[in-house]
Amino acid sequence: MVPQAYVGNTYNSADKKQGFVSEPEPMINALAAPNVQAVSTAEILGAAMERGEYVYFRSDMHWSVPGTYLVYEEMAKLAGQKPAAWDDFNNNVEEPFLGTLYRDYPTQYMVDNPDRLDLLSPKFNLEWRRIDGVDSYHLIDFLDYNALANDRYTVYLGGPAGPWTYAVCDNNIDRNALVICDSYGLAFVPMVTANYGQVHYYDPRYYDYDTVGYTVKEMIQKYKISDVYVVIGDLHSYDNDFLLYQVSSQLGD
Image 1 (tube, rainbow, N blue to C red):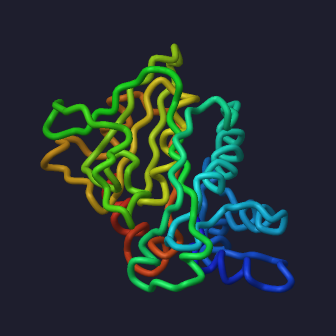
Image 2: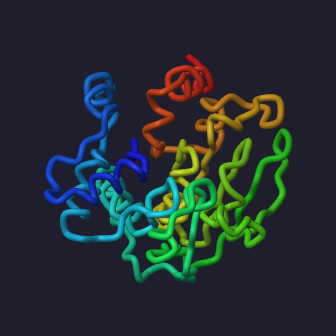
């Protein structure tokens, strides 16, 4: 569960940085099943902010891509994988970047301190497939440069759309993974492709059984998915029924 950028930036502006926390984490730790490993994004990102690292956008609600990478490193290790190095990816840098917070609440501070958007992509060949019917799909661009200026974070895979997208990677790896995410997972998904032959992702808000033709549980079985990652902004995790009802109902019995 990733704390929102405004929480991180409030913490980052404090004179004394100590004890960055995420409200849902105690609940997750208490309720997690034995085969679920919870990662404290607050601990990882808080330590990075104390080191002066750039882990949150100042003008957008999301974490930065370097912040995403720090959490990817830890989650890959817990899954028994060797994380890819930052330099193992191509990186197209866009700057200055002024995001959705600037669009809705513009300030001179944001103008004077614009963000940087790192667009990481794998160096090997892969196909990004978006399901559009039962056992059918169309290819999509990994970086969709049609995204609006203030919403450039969604250039990844066309944003948090659905109902289901997956990558077929030319990396000679047999193991497959699923990432359950909202928009906070968009930058995370391409990093995981370094460790799996297929990487599937879906946003529970946009999953549609009638289009996909399979339950999420059936998709996990159909594509022989062995590892499941969950990367969601903490606002969605406890402010509504996003996690408890949508994900649990979609997974089935």
